[in-house]
Amino acid sequence: MKNPLIEINDWSGGMTLNEKMGKANQFHAGYGLDFSSKPGYLTCGVGFKYHKAAGVDSVQPTYFPAMCYTVYDDHFWLGGYDTKIYYNNSWAVTEATDSDQAGAIRSMAEYKNYLYYIQNTTIGRKDLSQAYNAGYTHNWQTGLTSATYHPIKISANNKIYFGHGQYIASYDGTTFTANTLDLADRWSADCLEDFGYLYLAIGANYLSATGSSKCKILLWNRTDVTWNDEIIIPEDKINAMKFYAGYLWVWAGPSSNIYVIPEGSRIATKIWSFVREDPTINLIVYPNAIEVNKGTIYFGLSDSGNTATSASHPQNPTGIYSFPANPNNFSLNMVYQNQTYNERYDSLVLAKLLPDSLFASYSYYSDAAWNYKALREYNTGNNEALYQNMAVYESFRFDAPKNKKIFTEAFVIQYEPFVLGHDIHLLYKKDNETSYTELVQINGADYVNTYEKIIYKKIEFKSLKLAMYIRGSTSANTRPFIKSIFATGHLINKV
Image (cartoon, rainbow, N blue to C red; front, side, top):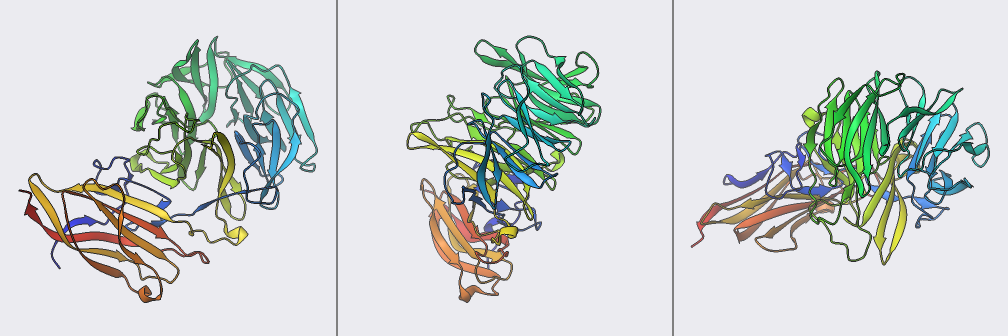
């Protein structure tokens, strides 16, 4: 066979969200993919499904700005926008109590055998030694400053901290102090994270009359009457933060660009930029919409659209993204995609549900109304096949040299020996085409134990994009692994 004109055999660099720019080991876009489990191969990742509400697969009663798994009683709790607290009961979301306090439940955390939750001006708590619908003190602390976001952080010094407007409150299991730290007027503590053991990092936004206009990270040793140092973020607002494995990750600005700060440093380096395709639509990562599992950081990218006529932004779609928690090996992936716009992902949490599952509070706007869902990964503890959802891969656009066209003769896809129940599709679109045409679908008994498929197909084009749909078994935890794709042919004169 002739030397390939197009060859793809490395996906480890992740996606670029740009169909013409990237390295040889990157690709344009996709979702539901896994390129890290087996280096050098591409496959489908663990899929997501809608979680049940009141025992049936249905729309949830509200969205959940906060969620928390509590180790003490092995329960999974959800804090509702409707002031209610819900819990996971037999794989379904069920109401536990109404807090009878004003405001959405913004954050939740487990601390010393209690579940703490913060609302508009109150902090409540639940004694986890009691039944799911008992042991609540909804007004445990009152008189807090009203704010859009109320973060909670159990810090390295074994105290719990609460952000409420310009103040940081603290509690050590005995003494509660409402204003342990005062940031100054118009500054709001919207995010709290550790910065190593020495400091609490406060994501502070300055609230002008028209909204947040500047931001910075305040580093506080948790004992002095004022903060000890600052890190400037060159954006108008800090949306979310996460400290993990020696790095503080920050999502900031109207595009939720990603910055990283090594522990001990005071310099934030931008590591990823999302693009606002519509200047009227912001891309948002909410403070609780970040989770870490096995060295991978997950985050939900939302947008500010909320009408049926909101413009879509297909090059930077909403969804659940991930990347390895190592800036020296950064690669962006999208593990879940649905509507791609008019969506919000309020919270992500890792729940210990035989085994761990990633949960998301997910809402989408459709038919002039918000629809509330809870998403979770498929779980072997519930006898579910993990890889049953279809994953989608899109390559870069391959352009012929100036004054030339490419004429293909054959396409080849190579994979590990095929297993019955797997499904692989290879597709293409050329030049100005807007939809893909299928080259081959690999499934069924005829392909069992094969490792390569050659498709003889003559296509003449100036530019070409390839796509794959990949799905594992719907009844077992197996999935196909793609090794390479290439096309042979030759160049011809354009004129």
